Length: 561
Image (cartoon, rainbow, N blue to C red):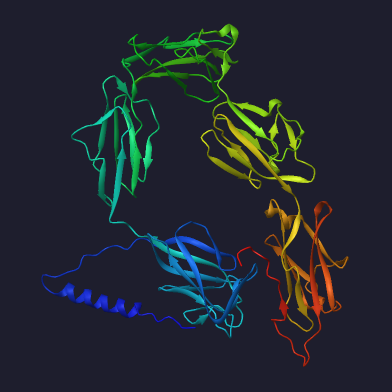
């Protein structure tokens, strides 16, 4: 395989000499440009033959090539290995690679600081080489991961496209709706005004790559910023508002209340003929629950356990506030006198629960109608194995199964997958749907099953066992091994084990005690769970001698061959 020839250092020396000469000549000079800071762009991890997983997407790729008789394979303990193959790392569009750090099967490293960034083997030797030098001669077996360093290549300019909604006009002295902006410079601000008898409803600022569209008041929206990439923003259209709000007042503005005292707080919107008189209420302080009634927009009920609570009422472009002080040591109520006798109901979020997409029957306590309600800003707590905690009662999984994850689909159609090795609270949108995804909780051989060991070999015979869910707990559940139904003591002569799911290494001294033929290794875990793998002992090669390569591993199928 051809080794790459690098002329970078010679070229750099020539350019530095030229810069020095020009700098010393009268009337001549060079402009200095600072190179972007080098950062870790991504880590490419070997997970299968000619396949890579990326810690950050779309920043670098790896491609394979082969000599006439070359081939590659993948094994979990070694990564990519084989004879007569090379792997080249290339930057994705918009990025520049400055160096690559190659890790072998034992996390020994070699660094390549000049393009092309290549690791390779020969048809005669599987030892990975960088720039023609092996990472560790006659020892390195494969490549497990590649750290890629570099920087994002800055663009010279960015395009900004603003699409206006209906019932609005761009002011004549503002920027164009389509602009090309030099990198690092601010775009020309674009300003829109609502058409006569129209206004802009409140909306959350719309942001895209450093540019923001914001509602400055009921009749004005501005778009401005410094683009960090291409921008496309659509401004929401204005809505009919034949009579605009000019102000809002609140009564009373200050009140001390005691336990169970009902108190009306009312906002008045001006003018009386305003088309949209909706009032938005909020409070400051902790321990607050807001109550509302859809037919009572200008009044509000709240329940407070704090002192010096401030209540805000907002309409149009202005807002006012009232201060409420709790004088009793116990809970006090501040209430709008609006259908209070029939009972105000808290603002809630309705959640639909799907126990099992396959129609399984829930055990334990399950909410009536498959729905629950939570207050705004609250959520649902999930414990281990994603059993739903509801009033202190656990929802039992189907027999023999655990919840690998939950799928949360919000009202806007967005989907979130929450995985079983995390716990916490998720804040739901209105009308969200939660689906529980149950799988069998089992341990299984991940690599080493079907391996072969030859008598006289000095190599260990290696196995890895995983768990179908919460794999991080696999090693903690591991208690020991059996071979052919017989317990095997853990010591330096028999076997060693290590974290990484569970890695088991059968020692040559122990393997020599086994007869030729097929054997069964059984890994034992807590709760009487087991997982088994087969291996074969073959007779020593004629002529004697041993080799560290006399262990044959069956490569697990990845579906990518």
